[in-house]
Image (cartoon, rainbow, N blue to C red):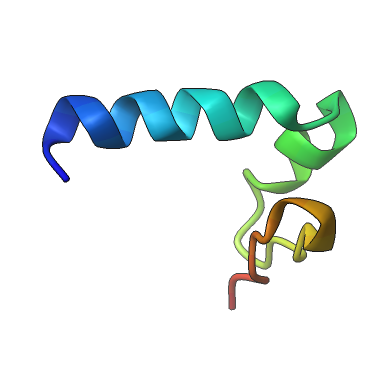
Length: 42
């Protein structure tokens, strides 16, 4: 996967998140988003 493909994949994933989910991903201890397959961080 090249850089542009990764950016597009990230854009598509964030577009599916609710505002609350996206905001929670900015935290150091971001929770998982099971419905999108995003694992918890730290």
